[in-house]
Image (tube, rainbow, N blue to C red; front, side):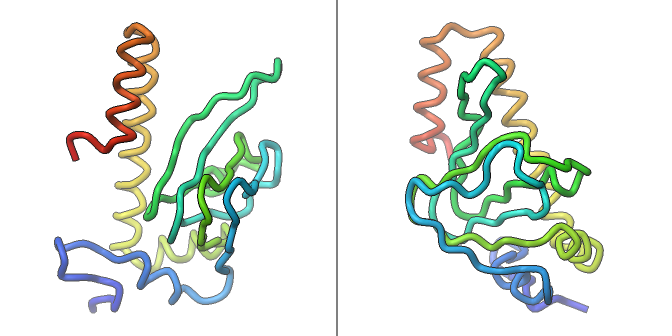
Length: 162
């Protein structure tokens, strides 16, 4: 049986249509520009899905150095460490623009993943793509000059090659 969230467009799956149907354990959160969504060390109890806006993910070292680990756009998930048993957030998230986020509690997200295989596939595909991006960033950092790294970041921000 086909889910109403399944779309013909690109043979894909539309999480915007599916996620509102998962029942309890979800809410819409409007976050103004520059507002903190969660802070490193907060309880990891939900996954976030960006419906509108951009979100910056950061981590702070024990010595106080801050590093940006990601800039996420519409259609991105974050906070998924909650599903992997993280009790506390390993980083922070802040709105770079006015954002509309769907907050899905851990248990509701797990149930949605088990219930809808198309959603599960989309979510796993997203996580793997993000993991590959992190690996590429690490390799870039280890082996390329700062000039080449800057050029790569600028091309990524301009969505070059998409």
